[in-house]
Length: 227
Ligand code: CTP
Ligand code: CA
Image (cartoon, rainbow, N blue to C red; front, side, top):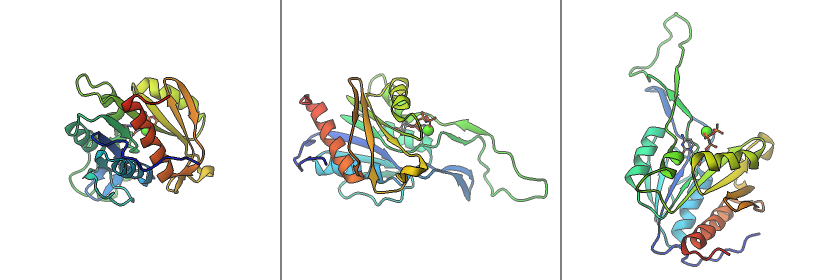
């Protein structure tokens, strides 16, 4: 168990959090999405608020309810999420918990695609912008602390280490989302915090507890008090 008090550790700080899935349109009635519930990201936004921060939550269409006291910007697609994030810099720390769709349909149809007897349509996919990587490499507005997530189904820590370097962020919160863990959509989480200093294995905890512990770590990092 964690022992993180409810002190106003982030008073006077501005924190940005992304959360939820993104929806990438195929046509006006269909989209590509993923199984993210938004629970972990929303819990981080709520915990940062409880710690006294001014919080902006940029959320895709998540199951989780808007946290109280947080400015929530609702977006649908990865490109909309990137624009909303950039509009809300600068911040002291940014936490990228969203499960951003890696690809979108190249030419989403303006009209509903119909079965016209000519067989199934072919969808051409193009890669979405990487929001975490672009904020990590921002020339003028890079937050002091940039935290990414890595949901992996195998070699969790090895992939997370690579991801931290590739994206240019400071920390990666890595979790095992292989179906056997039941984590996707659930209320608990088992994570590893990957930093430049190494890897911390955190105990299994509720998403709210993981959020409070991450917020306490962020506060310590911003005030330079982490041992
Ligand atoms: N992320 C992002 N923008 C994207 C893709 C990912 O901001 N277009 C962020 C996520 O919010 C997360 C981190 O990058 O904080 C890692 O996401 P992940 O999907 O694990 O990494 P990818 O680079 O997309 O690699 P892959 O899905 O192939 O494992
Ligand atoms: Ca991805």
